Image (cartoon, rainbow, N blue to C red; front, side, top):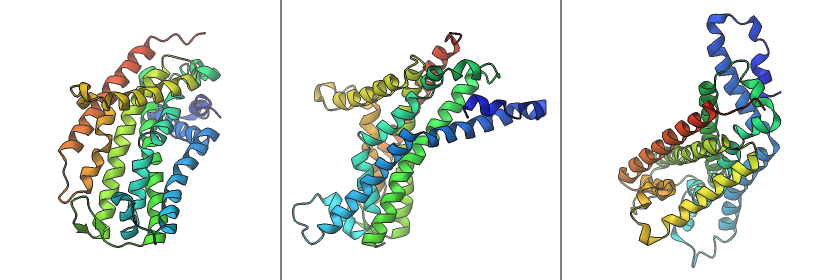
Length: 291
């Protein structure tokens, strides 16, 4: 059942004064069910979950031969939560952005491609409400993709390496409970970065009726930002690039936590989210969906 069909079912029996809020809540739940039920999204989540398992098994198998390994990865053997952190570090440049690109690129373009967008707007939902619900579902998708990597990594890491004290990047140890809280903060920060990328995808999705094209465009934008961030001659541009702040979550693993770069990253992510959602609204509010 499409999002449009879900909104229609039972609407006639709902009181008029509660119908608006009911529609939005039901639309959001329907949208999340559609995202979670698509086979390509399930396959993508499977790939995300496999990476921390591979890291944990590889480190466990080679635990007796610790020479030459990166300090960050070797620290896994001291605390299982480092599996989750290592997996997030590995997946942040490509796999997680690819996952959010697939969902955001399909947000509007997918509805237009299968012909349900016109039907959806005749309920009426309202174009602004539609975009708000679509973006809220993207935010939730960013959280659950990031949390999936963290939870799978944490579970397999704890099972293989235990719950000993975590060595922070400052060289000091913190207890497992404090490390778990740092992990929650890291997941929240990375989710905010991905949600901002999702706003770019939502805007691109309003420009086309081909979800695959929108997804590819978002991935290319992400890769381009990484390329620009690697050019030292463009250092003046780096603070304005979303990916420049993506790895600032490492400052949450210091003792004490260093929040300046994290705060800047969140502000940049908020700016991207607001600007590109507004661009998506400006485009979608005048979009012809009659054909």
